[in-house]
Image (cartoon, rainbow over all chains, first blue to last red; front, side, top):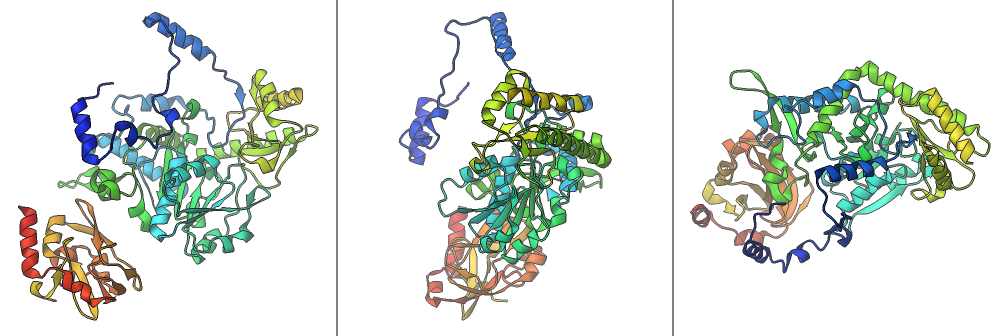
Length: 442
Length: 128
């Protein structure tokens, strides 16, 4: 890595900001993430040897028949998505630094925003964020800014990683409080809401929730409004092919994990944060927004707009520390959504729900297994298993099937359970293989 | 509309027309420096403001600026005309572009602010 600063430069900079040393400056970064040790071979390798070694390491990856979901969903991605996103005019992770010179990129972002707004039935969407978790945390932060309140009420079914991300944002703000809405049959206990919402900045809900269940959102936004709180809703965009969109049940902010729109799983990233809101909150929206305008000759043009509250202008007073976006992932999601179209997305959502319903029917018929909850679910469900869920998964994995996510580490109160997901990628034969794998492993 | 000599100024370029119900706005110099103003966010009626704490935001094509309360007090009125048409703030910062009125809790606070002559000197120094 090329670092242009001399030792003298660094000393001057540290002196100016009053930090005793660079180590002191980064002391809040946990030490295990600082200067990590790499397990590199003792003897240096030439290019061919390096390639062989990497191929050997890659061969250790196993590609089981996977029924994992829990926030990231396996999709079949049409070849056209890769063909379009691989075009060199588009192939950058960033919006360019002279954005208006790249009208094609800005138009793609504009189409992305229109797609997200339409999917979530919201007034406006931004150019994207890092992932669903960062979108969720930023939406809660925006609700805190709008209301001036610091109590955050969240449903127990919100993805635990989203909550971790939010708490990391507020790690040095002890005045923020988090109040969990208890779970009733795997969903939010709505009867508890009026008392909990008093003095809250927002109610944060996810539907389908982390356990796959569809939350009953009827009347929820009214309860929030009555308490002066905003409604932050997270939703898998594909589920919106058949489920009510956040805008329809009165959400102020609506977010989601855009990976679900045809992006590869890639061991966790890069993913794509979807972020949308009501127009009245647009100035609290983090990140960038691409707008449509006319030039002096009346021709259509795309520009970055509402930048006045961004970091490069407002510094420490910016709405968010995010001033970039996931341009290439956003493009892929836009192309994927356009290829499916509204009808296709409905069919896609239906095949997800169908695959999961069939899996639930087969698995709950296995002796000793049962569905943990009665409520309606989308493409994943909680299965109670006899004995250790983690041991069951390991056994089945050895036979090439990943049967789902053991929930005990995240939700100890649910006992020995698996979160099992079946997307449109799973055929009837695949699901019968899953059934056989669980039977064998029990 | 008060004359520039009739109001007091802060170092952060707000003006206040003192009285039982004080009127607050931004100076002509401030609107000129900001450029075309496109959005104004005002405090709520009934909100209690503390001297020198941010209480409003004025956004121009260049940036967004915090507006600091020149004196402490409770907001009694806000100017909906500027939120409806922010350009009014550029056209008439001391007149139709006033931001809000407040019942002052400590009238002596205004005494510490700059008068017109002192403010002109302050601006001159700051720009040199």
